[in-house]
Image (cartoon, rainbow, N blue to C red; front, side):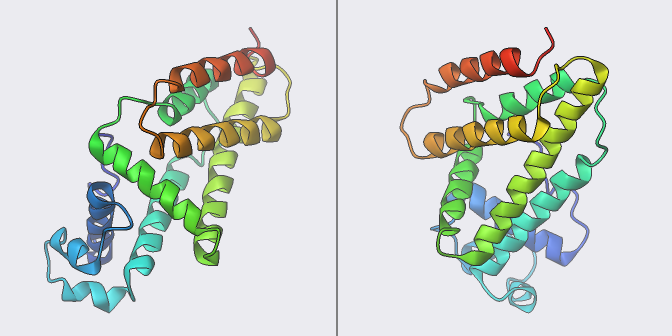
Length: 200
């Protein structure tokens, strides 16, 4: 399992969000309830109602916390090894060796993104998520151009292309019984990067 984003909680609210995250990883969005979140919470479940109005309020707050954590860790705008950074990003987004909790959380994110079709708050949340990921990729690509590792290209367009492909990978992985095809997609992404991005 990847590093727990809630390993160092300091406040009651963070502990509640950590419980929500654990519930999402084990049960998914459709099956979690305030009760099941409370079972993951070491303090009195009544505290949950003091801070949050309901299940969706909790889930959105949890996702916002994760986004803020990612954003705070990737705000330098400069990367010493941009090619390695880009490769690691693509690798993480096309991984197939996921454990059950990682697969469940990926499926949860896909289900929540689908809610954005009719729920404006979720739509705003995922619009922000896309913007943060795009900004991260643009920074990597710009750093690569500056260091000479990458050829001249349009960072914004490359970032949007990668996100569109990788978002499709996540959606298909979460809604398919097989992921053998992911290797082929990763190979084609590598060919795209060699042709359009990498200097050599």
